[in-house]
Image (cartoon, rainbow, N blue to C red; front, side, top):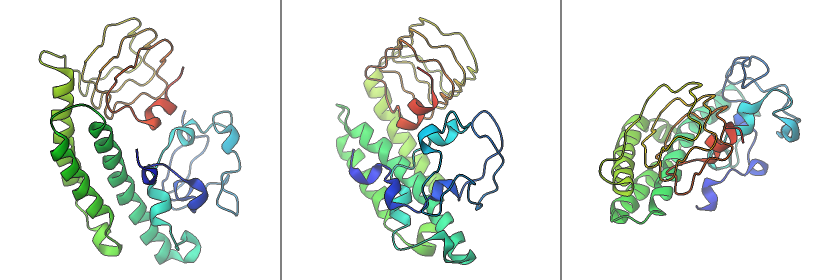
Length: 240
């Protein structure tokens, strides 16, 4: 993974603490409107409760990862430079966040031994070109189209790795389901809802976890060797 796809909060202006909005829930201790600085944000744009986010009621913040998008768009810019500057910066951040997420997944796919390296490298170049745009050009990127194209490629990689006959549970609602000790090897769980699921002792080797919601899922004793597209955000949102 390249350094540019790793969050560097010290080089950012606290975009994730200002740009998005959230509602009081199990993930956040309070309501915050989009564009409104979190009350925990210090004047230096660092989080005042970063060392105790979960205890303070902000597990959603603890699990968030911008994949380096924050520091990339905030170079020489600040949301305190005025309403128009802030709006443009927040919009750029929203687009860049999605592009960097796609790049993270493409690099994860390149780390696998498949015959699709050339196609993956071409896709990386295409997304990097989009991420290199600025201003209105960046904000005009058709992110949905890019996601569809990359998603189709990642699905091919997943199928090649998992092999013929692998089960497909993509998009399933497995909220709070008891999956203790289950054999889930090579199962596609793309976009599945596994919030609060009990996965203790389950075998998830080579399972495709792309976009699966693992918030609050119990991963104690889970075998995740070779699991596909499991991001730091997903792991941080789970338990165990």
